[in-house]
Image (tube, rainbow, N blue to C red; front, side, top):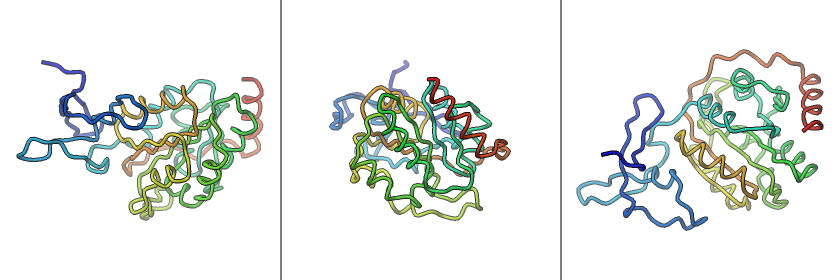
Length: 246
């Protein structure tokens, strides 16, 4: 017998599990039920009770898989993408004039997204960031929390390593960036790792006032993607044109 709460992991080797509706706690944050609430619970031993499950213990998407799910939802929103492999993967997955790729400038994608959101308050602005980039520009979280732009959605792909330079460990495995964002004052903060939760939360954020912080736990897999083919000046020119036209 099928159930709408039967989870199916999308990552390699994943298996689904069922969560009984009566076992789920009420959503204390926004009064809504999301798949991530069910995903955060799992059988807890012989007593038959459920216990919290950290995302790191589940099957995670690659960053490219998670990014593809987001690009399937993005419409005409400008997307600021942090430097390194995130920009390279974004170019391969869905190159568009509304993508602003960072070339070599680390830790400032969120700052650029914040500036654009403040300059154009009627436009939804999306930032694709990484844990290493956020750690390098941590002060931007406080600035976002203080200024509270309602039209900013800050997505962080957290693989706990500096993937572009050889997978050196980042401090995001110790410092919970979602908790930092919450303390800084983001209106909405969610931590997810499976495809259906990524889609659910991102769609909800685009439709509601922010600022939003979506932390997506991803594995260390890197997509085979070429360097961004455009020069910074050309990226800026076509991005400005896209923003002015939409």
